[in-house]
Image 1: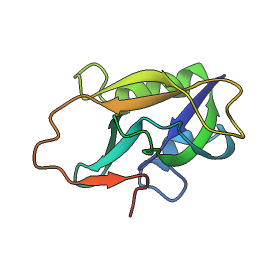
Image 2 (image 1 turned 30 degrees about the vertical axis):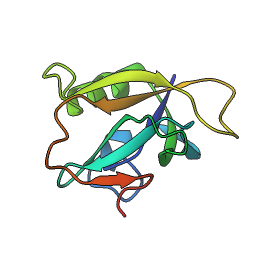
Image 3 (image 1 turned 30 degrees about the horizontal axis):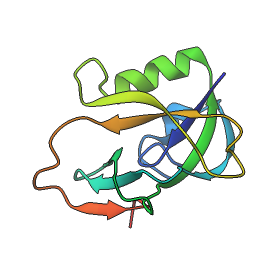
Length: 119
């Protein structure tokens, strides 16, 4: 199982949450400082931030290999839309890193959201 931090449409109640069916919800979580969200229209993108007070709020899930491969496809890894990286989380999940998706394309014209999506 792989720990995956989600912050947008994959969260409970989100339009893509069904992709996590059968996986294990570990709890609400927050990244360590160094990340922020941007609105990309109907979904957010998380990027690295130089602001030491910037953290992203989301959910932590334990997913199997098949689900992880499906998430990679959904997030457009092959097209260079996102990359899956290891990130640090704040307590109570600080014991080990989690995988998450960082947006790779231009942020020009996109609005900064800060810590939470939807606002």
